[in-house]
Image (cartoon, rainbow, N blue to C red; front, top):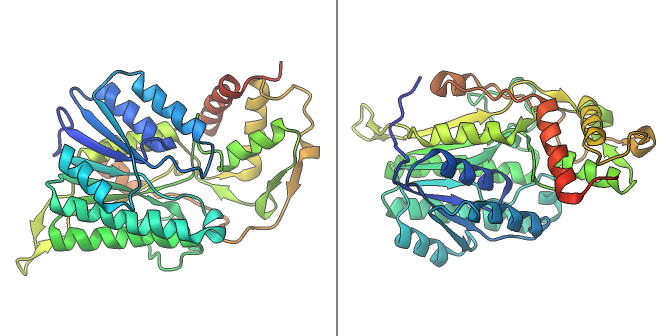
Amino acid sequence: MLQYNISLEGKTVLVTGAAGFIGSNLVKRLFKDVKNIKVIGFDNISDYYDVNIKYERLKEIEDLHRDWVFIKGNLADKACLDKVFADYEPAVVVNLAAQAGVRYSITNPESYLESNLIGFFNILEACRHHQVEHLVYASSSSVYGSNKKVPYSTDDKVDNPVSLYAATKKSNELMAHAYSKLYNIPSTGLRFFTVYGPAGRPDMAYFGFTNKLREGKTIQIFNYGNCKRDFTFVDDIVEGVVRIMQHAPEKQNGEDGLPVPPYKVYNIGNNSPSNLLDFVTILQEELIAAKVLPADYDFESHKELVPMQPGDVPVTFADTTPLEQDFGFKPSTSLRTGLRAFAQWYAKYYGTCV
């Protein structure tokens, strides 16, 4: 196992996408576990999905009464971002802000270029000009595209993206590598696998399915139910991020005397893909148990099996061996446990059927 070389105690940490699903959970975890930490949250509160959920997440953070500053801004606004770095001098940067979603990238490609490329470039430039000890950033399992070899390993070639979203995330990894090489900036990319949980993103399948079932609408199950996903509970994602934040790739010189890029990439996934139909079965059972749906709900009449959508892949499956070897951690929350937590949150937030 690697030894931690960064202490977060007493440090200032910048978390972009702090009103987002993973970002807000990360901030709460940092305040819970780390003494005297100051967290700067940065988010543009985009209307890609219901902003009320984002404001609810922020309220939960504000209620903690910790050393917290929130700035509403856009990563593509270089002057705004530069001012944040100049004013607060973050020691660790966790860049989770991005335009997410595979299918949305097909209909709204411009927003991906602004957030995921220009925005990430501005993050790298800011890290270059300030004494940042470690840049941790979100990549995605989508970079594996239509690779046939499973489980997906970070040693695999990922040169065949099947969506613009995937292409931007692969670009982030390449850009980070270049900056790590040129400017000796320690950076770690995290390929997240299908993150889910309470107060998650409404555009994700489990959340969208629940909304539609509650409204009596039909849900579409792609690839005729033959998709498999490495569903990863948000608490497991956050656990991995917190551990990785505390070890920056080591700076060292190669035989030519030039810096070897202090650069790493890890998968964070459950290492146990679930069939989409099994996933839906567990979801419906937990929604009934949480009284989101009535006990006699007729699921069969509200399900439709349809072909694969453009940009989708039939399976995602994470090889987490490097994560286990370096940090002694492997995501392990069962789908049942995770979906139960989501269903209970949903019942509390939106109300029950009785």
